[in-house]
Amino acid sequence: MRPNHLYFVLAYFMASLLWGATVERDPSAPKGGWIYPSEDELKKVESAIPEKLPAEPRKDRKLLTYSLSHGFKHNSRLIGEEMLKRIERKTGAFALTINNDSSQWTSAYLKQFDAVVVLNATGLHNGFKGENRQAFLNFVYEGGGLFGCHAATDGGKKWWPEYSKLWGGAFGGHPWGKTGTWRIQNYDPRHALNKCFHGEGFDINDELYRQIHPYRKGYFHTLTCIDLSARQNTHNNNGKIKTVPPEAERKPGEPKPANIPLNLEREYPTSWCKKAGKGRVFYATFGHNESAYWNPKIVEHYLRGLQYVLGDLDANDASDKAINPPLK
Image (cartoon, rainbow, N blue to C red; front, side, top):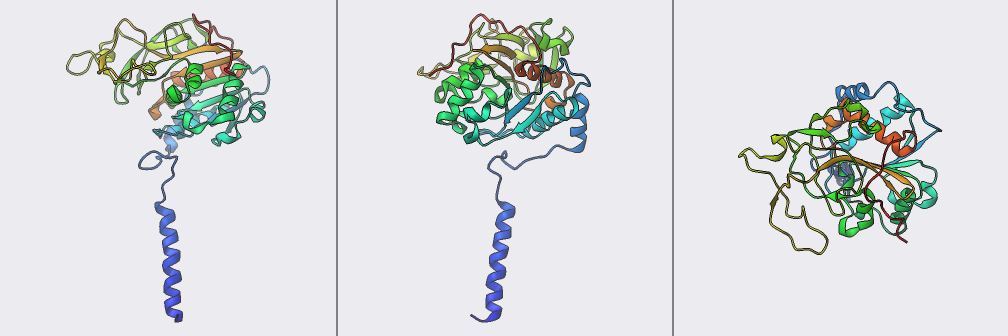
């Protein structure tokens, strides 16, 4: 091969490598790629974090976070991670570790942490397998804390029912979509995790989840819920009661029903806390939209939930039904 031909081949090969590197999509990113938080958004997150902790840590705390989705991917994962990093830096409430390699989540590894966070991650039944699933469950049931926001309940179901049982519910649609502003009822105004709401309800622009099986009333201690007295929450633009996706009332093994209207006699919780064996669980449906992570009320609600699952903030987590000890 003549030198000029060799040069051309090598140049083409290198260009191909470079071009391939620029167009390869991050498999963990949403469709279209990540949109990173702006400096202004990060400043708003920083400002939303309270100057003073709700409770002084009883010891140095370690918090482990999993944020990798195995289904729909939320861009708000990025600003959620930034919120946790800034809470760590500003308050000293915990030392944060983000580890999305589920194969490392063994019982021995988890022992060093006080609580784990599932940060807007979908499809954990595809991300955790075998002994790592059991280690996750046992960590909570044996006394660890579990914190979840938004997509944390979008996993498990028939593929990992023990995971859904741990939370007390599973994602079953969202009649309250991301473009609406919804009225939230302060279900327990005197609760330690609700002090950020000052005894009142509030409005939020976000996508809210509806919980299905194993959810049932009394399964946990409800903190906030959809305000069914607010027409914006229950009726569409044509004045008809909102419908829900076909699987919304479906239990495992049951046939799919047609779309059904919301049951205005039912409660639709948006945040709650509960006991799971010896462990503590907090979940809030807020967090599809990035703006939730610089909403001062939501950020403080999350901070209080974090301190509750870490074991530093005492809160009433009594429920009508308690989860049984871990499955063997």
